[in-house]
Length: 186
Image (cartoon, rainbow, N blue to C red):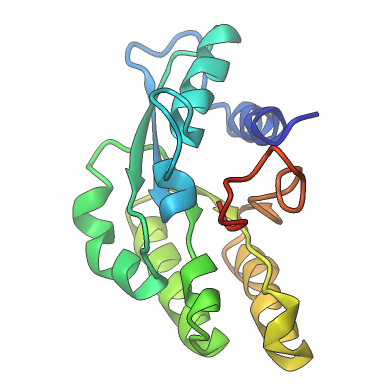
């Protein structure tokens, strides 16, 4: 199963569990993809980014949903925290939170990354917005201590906030020729 299909399938299961996509809904279910260049669709053509593909996949399954792209290339968890409130409009029912890769690539302390994500999750919880947390993994060249601390952030926060976790956003893509851009990061 391809990356896009596996995360779309996971999201549909999550939405079904939440009962959010009832056919009795008068308005489309509102989803915001909030993240960095991976969410923004950096280097991809029109309609090829994650949020576009998810919108198409949900529509093909007969799900009445809108998927807004709030991805910003180069964004860190600090930047995400600063823009969260105005990037996620009122009425949003689900946020797919995908941030942390740029923190890792810049060697930001995992403690700071975790603190920022914790604050974002707390704000979304206060607003009663469901969250699917999309995890990331640290590059091995950062050393085992950094890698262990960083990789634990996402499952720890998913457990703390009792939210759905997609453990590795690039699952099925990372390390596969033809699935990534030439930079090897996207």
